[in-house]
Image 1 (cartoon, helix red, strand yellow):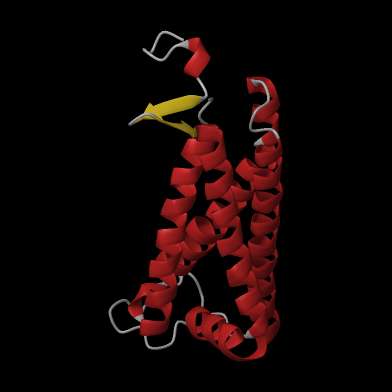
Image 2 (tube, one colour):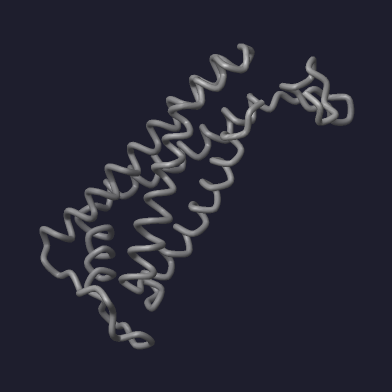
Amino acid sequence: MRSGIGVETAMHVHEKGKLVNIRVWKAVFTAIFGLLALAYAVQNVMNLDGGMYASFAYVLSRADHAAYPESIVPAIVHPALIWASLILVLLLEFAAGLLMSAGAWQMWRHRMADGDTFLRAKRHAINGVGVAILVWFLLFGVFGAALWQMWQTAIGSGSYNGAFQFSVYGLLLFGLLSMRD
């Protein structure tokens, strides 16, 4: 490496005399984000018939939109379409969480391996973070906020703000995982 870090320390950062393994932190951060995705998926399942369905129905109906009452997309009120969107989000949250958990475990197992082996160990983690970004950036940010204007109501705004935070977490983790050690 020519960036000032010698080959012998390419996988490590020395800080105040302590050795910190970047690979360990990648695995830990991925495990944390995977836990977050799984926690939200399970919470949503626990509140499926009540809060989750009601929130989705409210946002998709475009009810109480005073600031921008007109939209380029129609309101969705048919229960089958509401359930389909809700189930899509749930499946993707579970997929993101499980992929990130598997990736975190693989990275942990291969944290001391050669660079190519560790790179392959990140595959599930990177895919899981990508799925999480699709959920919270595409589904909530683009579709929910931009198309269904969910930011206009307290219920929608809360969901959108949380989704924005998770999108940023995901994008930052995606960048970190994409870096070669």
